[in-house]
Length: 440
Image (cartoon, rainbow, N blue to C red; front, side, top):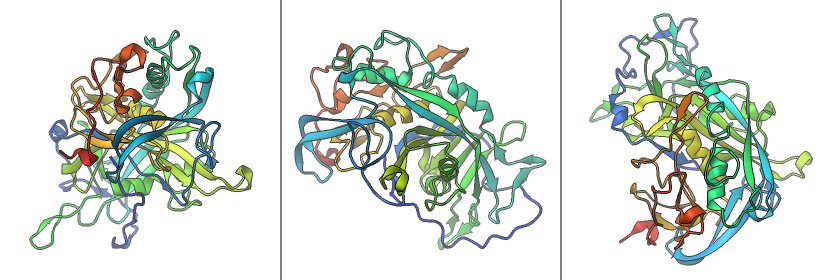
């Protein structure tokens, strides 16, 4: 799923007036009394178009030439299909994180995890309270279980002779018949400085405006925990959220991404994750909820230190998902595992040339796309997740579609002829070839 490549700051917002006291949530119209509606929503993730202040190509050994980014390699395949404009095409290119599987060896990629607290403010920028409880949602309880999860820790899989990380196991299944036995692409996690995202409320939130009148737009809504603290979950407008996450200029240090970049806590050689506490996104209104994660890259101008090559910071927003909010299909690290796996297979979100544009495909969940988004194919299915118990906790990483599914390859040359992994029964064959936009 894609959204506009630029997010425009609100130009018609009220002037901020700073007061010394905060505002209470009593009788506020943006408070959600229960989370029943989440169970009926469509939890999903999104590939967000790249953010940045210049465009460019990515440079890495064996990979796309032209800028400064993490290790990546290129490949291609031949199959009949249609491009984004509906024109017939049979030659497709892809770009993947790591080093080529036929060379073997282990590639280590630093994986900063940046916890982000969410600070809910009123329309004037004042802190908000429920009684004496500040509306400030803390990611701290979710950091350790995230680091201890199969995304970053080793577990046993059929695709590897030795225990390995979840996404590496998926990649080894995908390239099983092409890779040397010692080929791995592993993340080296590290927890970085907690950042804070302050979200001001839209002054029209919940008010009846217009003719005919309808409720005004909300920048966010939220539900309290049973004890009145913040927050059982937070819903935020995806455009507002993205503007607050990414720097507005290359010198901006006020946003979580900008601050982490300038502090050197995320670099172009890393795969960085911004971990939020039960923070989900909607398009326009909460009826179009909920995005639980997205991956993208931030583009910044180069300098003399890197030969003036454009800098691509591969990153994702992922929410921890507490049990019960979306049933059993999306919980704990489902979003993070989905985004990391997609970032491995589509690090530059099909934004550089024709890389990772695929033939049009239609997934069992009804999605119709033409990009190499390996998690989108499976999200929402009955067997979407692959429970793994480790470190005293049962995690729910998401099963992933393999490259062979997008190649319409029959039979598949992945491990055991699979099209999905780790659960090979989720996809038993590729999508039937589709016309543009899956037109009949």
